[in-house]
Image 1 (tube, rainbow, N blue to C red):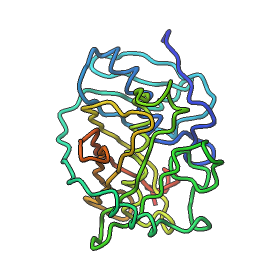
Image 2: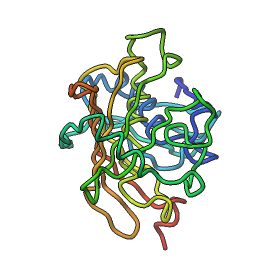
Image 3: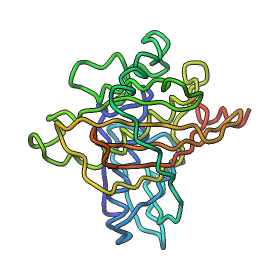
Length: 245
C-alpha cells in the first residue's frame, strides 16, 4: 500500500468526516488509474471518510481499496450500473426551487462543503437545492464553479467537485432536516468537463426509499442544456450504525 491520499478538513460534510461526493470523486480518480478504467466507476463508502488523515490505497483484483490503518474506508470498482438521464430544467425554474431550500437553522450539517449555510463566502460550493415547483420528489439548484477551484475562467475544475455537486441535491429529495442521511454508494458518469465560471444547474430525483435508505439520481447540466454529469446514489441513515435499529 504505497500510495496515499488525504481529504483535507475543509472538505467536510458532517463535522467530523468528509463530504461524501467529494471523497468519492477523489477516491474514484485514483482508483480509475489503478484499475485502468476510462468510464464510470462505483465508489462504496464502508466508513465515514476521515479528514486530514493519510489514507492508503491498494488494488485488490478488480477493486481498489482505501484504508485508514486496518479500517476499510472505501472501495472503487468497475460498474455496469445504468444511470438514468434526468431531463434538463431551465435555470429560471431551478432558481424558483432554491427558495424551497431548508432554513439555515434546520440544516443537519450547516458546515457541509457543498450545501452548508454556515460556510464563509467562497469557502464551499454554496448549493441550495430545493423542491422543484410542481413535483413531489425532485430538487434543483444552480451552481457556478468558483474560479478558486481551478486556474481561471473556462478552465476545467477537478472532477471531484462535479462529484460533490452531484451529491447533496439527491439527498435533499428527502427530508434530511428530519432524518439526516449520508452517502453510502455513488456511481458517476462525467461525459464532459465542468468549467470554472460557467453556470450550471443540478437536478435531483428520489427513486426509492425505506426507513433506513434512499436511492437517488442526479444530473448536472450546463445552463444551455448540455449534459455534463449524471449520478446514481444510495444513502443511509446518519449516523451509519442507525441502520441497525
